[in-house]
Image (cartoon, rainbow, N blue to C red; front, side, top):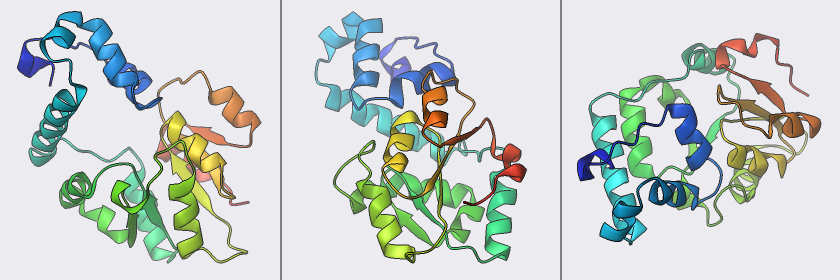
Length: 196
């Protein structure tokens, strides 16, 4: 989105995560701080957000979406063991459909809660609470995987065992661990995880 408007946002993925995965307005605020002229040219963030979404769709259509290392083997193991599973994401149905088309192993996950299925965005736990009440039995052991601080905060508001899987070094990781969350840099590192 920035490049299409002549601005070089040279952030690493980790740097992007630090902005996009915290608060709903953090990306907007930091892009505008980085490029104050862009804010003068287009003060309506909704316009830029729509351009960002279209840039993502274009990337997705060209095959730019890859699974985390270890995701495919984990999904295959869950399928073979017939363990109930679902995805709870803030992404829209349109983006999820593109990602699933690019990565057919994701279609082994039978249930998907996208942002059209709940009203409160993460870090509110509504999305996870809805998924748990829909699919879990009262005595089921539940593990929830997240890759962002906002998502993990939502997960912490449920009875699920919270697991943060990310390579980004979020400063909250020690406090999440103190609250009972596990942290792994990659899904490849999950061999030692135990259900509660």
